[in-house]
Every structure is written in C-alpha cells, then in structure tokens.
Amino acid sequence: MSDKVLAALKVGPSTTELRELELPEIPPDAALMKVEVAGVCGTDVTQYRLPLRGSPLIMGHENLGYLARVGSTFAARKGVKEGDLMFLEHYLPCGNCEWDHMGEYRHCAATEWFYDPQAIRYGYTSLETAPGLWGGFSHYLYLPMNAVLHKVPGGLTPEEAGVATTMSNGIQWALIDGGIGYASTVLIQGPGQQGLCCLMASKQAGADLVIITGTSKDARRLEVAKAFGADAVIDIQKEDALARVLEITGGRGVDVVIDCTVGAGTAPVLLGIEATKRRGGTMVVQGEGNAEFPSFPIGRLTRKGMTLKSARGHSYRAVELALHNLASHRFPLDLMTTHTFGLAEVDYAIKSVGGEGAPGAIHVSVMPWK
Ligand SMILES: [Zn+2]
Ligand SMILES: [Zn+2]
Image (cartoon, rainbow, N blue to C red; front, side, top):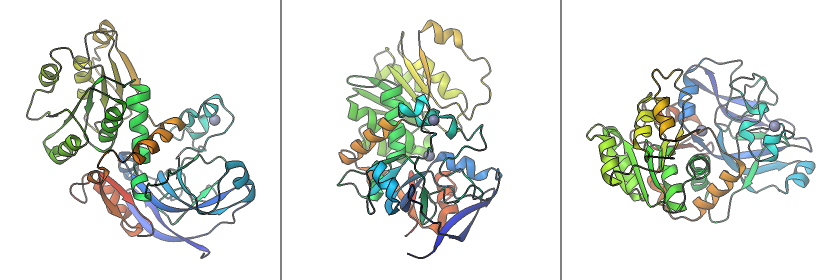
C-alpha cells in the first residue's frame, strides 16, 4: 500500500480538485476502508453549491468498501477483519446517549452538523479535523472506533450494495415512519432514487396499491417505477393528480403519503393532505428546503386526524433491512443504478444527480478505483 491517498477535494462552491493526501497511521482502535462505492444523492447537489464552512473537505457520505487495515482493538470490539466488505453509516455518534443505544444515531447531538460545527459526519467534515479522510470520494476512508458498520450480505456486489443508503431511507420513511405494510395504499411523490426506494420498500412489505407521481421530464423514471411494481403512475403536468388518486382509490384516498420531491415547494404537502383517506392518514415530509409555509392548512390536517412525520435519515435497523431487501434481488436494480464515475469525475457526478450532467441519471455512484 502506498503512503499516499488520492482524494477529490471540494475546495470551493461547485469546485473540486484531485489531491494526494498522507495516509494516516492507523492506531489499534481505528481502521482504514478502501472505498469501493460512494453514492451521490440530492443532499450532495445542495451542499456542493454552498461555500466551505472551513478548510476543503472530501465529500461522499454513502460509502461502502473493504477493510484495508484494522487495528487490534477495533477488530476485537467490532468483530471485523481485514478484507471484510462493509457498509459505513455517515453518522459518527457519541456512543453514550439514549439515541445511540436505540440505534438512532441520526438524532445524536454529536452528529448534528447543521447546528454544531464540531460535529463529525462522513462527507461533511473538513480536512482540519484530523486525519481528514472523512469522505468517500477518496481511495481510503478513516474509521475511528465510533464508526457504525454493517456487514454486506453474501451475494451482493459492491455496486448493488451501493444503493444501501437510499434504500435505508426508503425502509425508514415508508415502513418504520409511514407504517406501510400488508394491504396499505400509498402515494409517493417524486420518482427519483429516493421515491423509487420507498416504492420498493412498500411493495416488499406487501402494500396493495402504490401510486407514484412525477413531472413530464420524469417519463423514464416513471417507467422504471412500473418495472419496480408501481400500480399507477401520474404525470402531474398532464393530469390532475388529486382527481387521479381519488379515482384510483375509488374516492377513498390513500393511507400514507411520502414526499420525495426536491424543490417542489409546498405543493406536494398540500396535495398529500387532500390525497390521504378521510380519517387517520399519515404523511411523511421532507421540509428542510422550505423555510416557511404560508397559510398551512393546519385546521384541515387536524380535522382529518392526520399524522405528520419528518423524513430525515435512517436508523441502524433500517440499514439492516435495506441490505436484506437488496440481497433478495427481487427488483431489477440495474434500471436505477444508471451511472458510475471515477474520482476525476466527481464534479460531473454531482452535477448529473442535479440534472445538469449525464442525461437520464437516477442513482449515481463514484467508484474511486474506476
Ligand atoms: Zn445522501
Ligand atoms: Zn450520542
């Protein structure tokens, strides 16, 4: 192994440079991962455009790879060895709080980088925080003792397992937060990688009816949704989405709505409130991009006895179930994993997810050794 690490560094807004960094010493309570696949998601698109919060950083928070070096304490405590193929969560939790004991690392204060500049998360932590290898757009990643790892089941290639983060969110939002299961009726808004994973999770769980919406530019994605088992697809630019949902459900509305749109403002939430059944529906929203919601129909929400939940990240259990789902090979995942890029193409990879690079991108991965 060379004593250098090749990495793609974000050095400014929408700017990446390839650099060689020093390979750090691996103490007994740490390990080194050779990155095989680093997924790119919508969060990367938003983050990439923003100014740096400190020194340059290596992005890439959806990572898996082989353990290349494993310290003796790390090996003993984690039950892993060199050569193991592992999925790495992007949270680096404190390990002591109530959330961590429940496997809900996303809620741990130590991982809350939006508010705490000291918090470390893979893909968002600058080189200033030693040893700097905190992102997957790099040949190697550094794993301290509090890294959260999952063994990739046999029979899954790294490329297939590269969808694990998105599928974990799909399981979390659809099954655990949305409560979707046997005989559920579901409306998923947005047929991107996240919407498609919510769809697969719902079908695997036994949902009776899954409707998925998109716009006219999503025509291909809506075709993929059908191949994954969507019972109906709606192009909201050509059809009245609410009228169609009510028609498909015989006027009843759906049990659960999941908002997987990006940059669609408040419209998906308003549609969701009307499209849920008369009483007791659930809606799972991603509201981070909406600073305000003028005239939010809270009275309507209350009268329908609806439950509103927030989609943000996933639990330990959701990841385990996601790997199980992927290993089932039930869905033609290759329809979704449309593009892989090498380290030199990180900029293009992120732009492709944002719709400004390779046409037809759904799930995009960086494979640093490609
Ligand atoms: Zn992500
Ligand atoms: Zn904690």
